[in-house]
Image 1 (cartoon, helix red, strand yellow):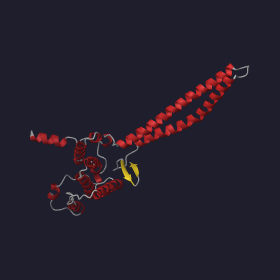
Image 2 (cartoon, helix red, strand yellow; image 1 turned 90 degrees about the vertical axis):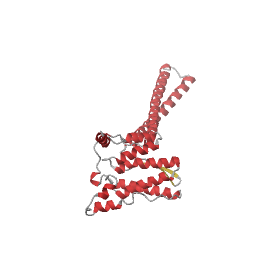
Image 3 (cartoon, one colour; image 1 turned 30 degrees about the vertical axis):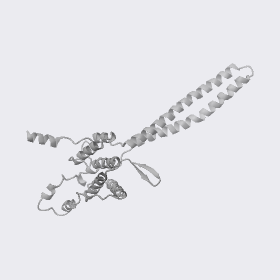
Image 4 (cartoon, one colour; image 1 turned 180 degrees about the vertical axis):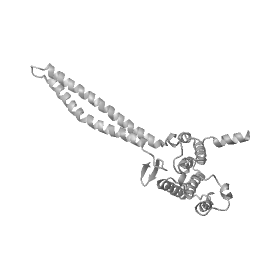
Length: 277
């Protein structure tokens, strides 16, 4: 029975990324951190990609609780990963270098002193992986399970079936752009309808006044209908163009492929606020 329990535990799939992201978006940061850590520790999972969730959860916990220990943990995650490597691309590594630099700057800004990372002894494992094999494998057995190396950095089976990470900020931006675009297209439809009404009104005035002079009221109504027609005729193409651009841009923002090792992030820079993917 004990063996059966152990085997079933080992075969249990790691938490899905969707579960962890949902917990994060609902503000359940401790649960999100736990799920992301379990996922990052699962065999066959590309660690640099999975650890983004761990790092983002630690940063969010620091922002909400102002607990510097969480910030130090985030810095430790980035430093430890850069020490171990196993990145799928140079862009992914550069993204983590940027995260480590930002964490270190925040630590200096608050005047905190983080403890020495527990992962510092890991260079010995790197030496053994790059030099001749050591006569015994016991030191490697004491550490955590080996992470996938460069040759294992290809997407694991089933990666295409997982829902893609769509940051909440990107979804909100796409929704706003799409709403503006649809509103402009609706305004275009209204402009076309009012233009047709003005044209029909002008034609009715011409039909009624056939064979005689226009009255003052008819002349004023005809001029008003003509002015509306000209104005709306010039307005609807502009509304169509801007509305189509807004809708297409919203779809592009939502469906644009996410750069390997990146997440949508907002950061203060100088006197402005920069939103990047």
